[in-house]
Length: 396
Image 1 (cartoon, helix red, strand yellow):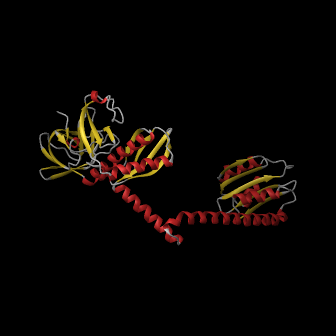
Image 2 (cartoon, one colour):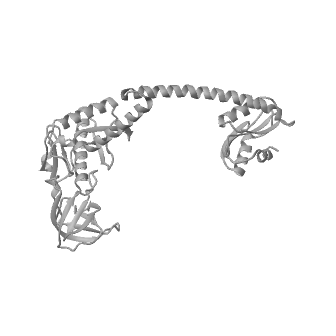
Image 3 (cartoon, helix red, strand yellow):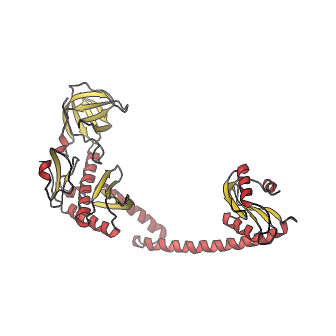
């Protein structure tokens, strides 16, 4: 069995072809069968680019191709649901939308990587072309301003509609090739993608014929990654759809805020500041309420200095504040529940009282759920399902 001729090497726009089945065997991953052809335009997953989809036609019978892989011999296998007899002629048809999308993404990646390398000496270490977003990992950190420069230059190349050509060269002749962005480490004949006056790279992937076909390159995000920078980007149709999503989100925000789209950031900043002020006021009011509630509980402290109570409107911070206020009087041991069940719990004691609040909280949690702990003089927990009477039993 000979290795398949890869038709997309010379014509990445080819979407239909005929071929002869040279091998058919059960798929190792249990997905039906896999078929090898004497020649194929299907791209197998490799080089960070996902495989093509499409189907094989056999005498009018259509078999969807769910995966395309290359083995260690460089044979291309097409995964289909049913076996096809060796020697049969098939017609292969490639999913047009998926092929064109990844041609845009892959050429866009070459353009963007070369821009980072040319402008910033930021080398691309790895690439992933995903179904929703694409990433390239740079060997060093880049700033937001540097990233914008690379994005601008990449789109300058796109809008220039430069020629993208495919050629083959012997690896030995490339050692001293000054335009080659990265040495391949390969032997024999090497496939090169040449972007006019911009980039020369060894690559087996599918690409557009001119940079204008990429449409636009948009950097969506950057993040620190393994000492360098991971750049998330979109090209072509994906960039357009991303723009529409962001535009719709900004327009909806502008309508909700009753401001112009360009004023949305300032309006959100004002809302954030107003919210912080209201939160401070709410906290101040809550603190005053807790102080009043704590004062009202003074009359319920028993002769032994013990108080067990429930503050239904208090959160964990409020319960802690009330408990601290109550144990400022000597001789006190206080256990307070806050909010609805499951409750916040705080147990506290005065400095002169012999009790271990932390141990008591752990005992309550062991019996009634929740999680917490603390010091001998003050401990707290959350998620406790316990009544006031049940809680009182732990304090003796």
